[in-house]
Image: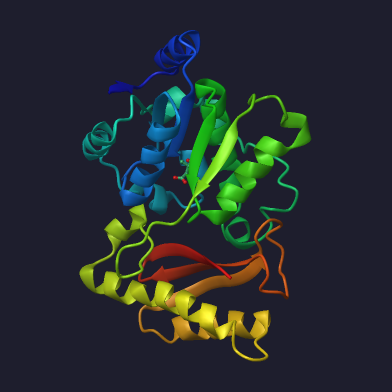
Length: 286
Ligand code: PAF
């Protein structure tokens, strides 16, 4: 496995793959890799001739400097995991290599057709602009045939789908396929997240209340006369009743448009919860 830190070396590696007619799978990550990322990389290795993984804590998608500073980083451990899975290339640039000073300080703006006006987009203004800025740059540099993203960040996945499908961009990324992969959970139900590393043992136990409540809500949705609004409120109340958890939002929306829905059909519930100082997200499909 080769670790690449410059755009030039990355483009050279990509050119070599293209010349050899090899298909390329890309897994964009911010490092602090866990079994959730590993599942994406395994799939990329299986489905493509060559697998590139980017490890880059993207400063432009953080609207909270403290969150950026505290984001866990461990490239040696990440590299070991990726080598074990069989990824061929890891792209781990510095922010200065990735962006010019101007790019770092200007807000990249993109038309999300309203997909960013709800949930994470509403709570973290500018976040998805930063995500699309880095992801589109990675697509441009790596020219992947397939790119893999976890469904835990469901709104991010919907936005990336939209970016790639948007008519004015059609053709920009060739026949790139965006592949969403299911959430990986601990046996306890807790959704794997790099942020879990910041939870104390006690907080981790408390955080189980999130997935437990989401799973229970699948049953609540089947109860006679259950409405989306009532289930949504019941989830919020149940999580807030757990000492140490505070819901930022829980919204049951349509899986494609991310707009509020009054039917459980094709619906997904997306939650963000503070567990102490750590902001955790999770979701459940009805
Ligand atoms: O999901 C993530 O880890 C990041 O948002 C991504 C897609 C790697 C872009 O920085």
